[in-house]
Image (cartoon, rainbow, N blue to C red; front, top):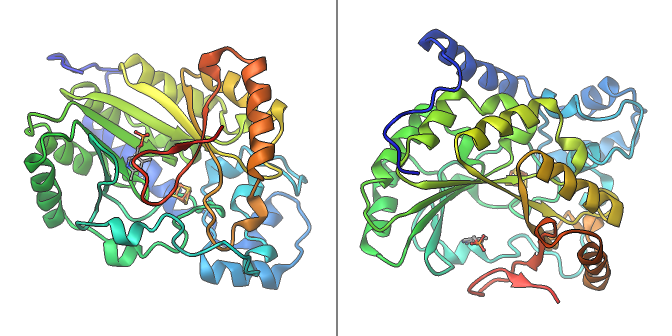
Length: 345
Ligand SMILES: *Cc1c(COP(=O)(O)O)cnc(C)c1O
Ligand code: SF4
């Protein structure tokens, strides 16, 4: 968005800004990493502890407190809990489920950059997330090898500057909002110097698990950018949208940022028509349009979340009949080597 006047959401002093920054960082460093602590806090009996802990060795558990606060006490099948709680079934191997289902290792032409689709590139600015989702297709991604430093920024931007077909930068990861506001501002300012870039898209789940991440500084940085800014959230269930997240999203909307959502279709979490209808309606109320509903990427350890494609199609057909067109996300699968997400029909 091209604008000269920075939007001031609230008149805050610099001290308050720093406190806001500290607050999300502190919540992040206080995130729960221990299965027993999580289950105790929710008054849920501890079962299969050994298996759960073993699954953590493969992919650690990580859940920030604001996300735990949205879970229902005593409910072992809470749809938010099931997304983050390590399961014994993660240890089983299953045919067709592999470590790098999207073959991303091979499409990394350049460190921190995935250029698979025309006119847009994925930039992996950060290697970490604020939550570890058990179904994550990057649960085995070699983030360490792809860890990028500020020196790599320049090379990424050089690559983008040389290819005038690229109109949009997609900050993904990891979660790009793991960077602090100063780092993001610096990156965006540098990217703005590339004339053919028009849009900046941020794919993030961080505000969903720590709404405090939507600082006034972040809102102002995006609002005052010359780019059209899009934030693609990752919300799988309507219960993830509480008042805190709702308010954070309102600030982004007020600043003219387009809000979209992508969800993953997950067994026992959001696989009923009612779950999906509730999700779409709650998203819209919060100013977010449903964008994609992804079929699970077949990553090893996540097979217990999978929904058969035929069942997904039936569900999607029911959504088309029940909802206004703009409330129905596109059902897609990501396939290696394709020029876009693959629509399922
Ligand atoms: C999903 C994805 C994009 C974005 O695709 P859109 O259809 O524009 O949302 C871009 N690059 C890669 C590598 C992706 O996986
Ligand atoms: S936030 Fe996204 S990238 Fe991070 S663990 Fe969850 S699904 Fe994976």
